[in-house]
Amino acid sequence: EVQLVESGGGLVQPGGSLRLSCVASGFTFNNQIMRWARQAPGKGLEWVSTIYAGGSAYYADSVKGRFTISRDNAKNTLYLQLNSLKTEDTAMYYCVKGIYTYNERGQGTQVTVSS
Image 1: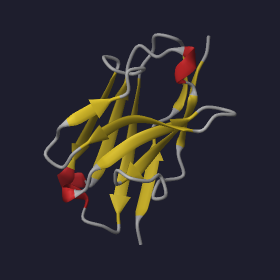
Image 2: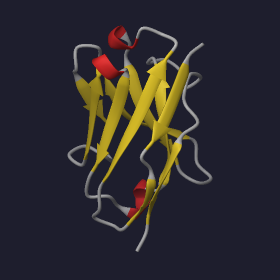
Image 3: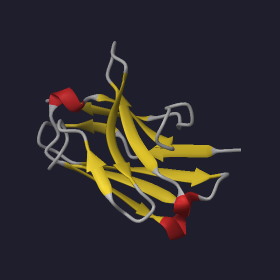
């Protein structure tokens, strides 16, 4: 059974930073493409970033230069470093297995950016 457990969210002021983590189990993590997605209140799921097994990373324009995706295959863990946070980054952030659908994702971790 695929399990994805996110953590690291919280309340942060604009300009602040957070590091999200996602511990994966139930599949071979080290050869799996992984993504982060987010959902703001009243909106649909939005792709944030993708990382391939070899480490190549891609970002949505809205987060490029501020967020960094990474993975530790020895720990079966996916990360998202969030810097220079803006109020519009407020959302539930999800760790997603695979590249085609959002069906296999964790329960999410809430990020709230507010002064």
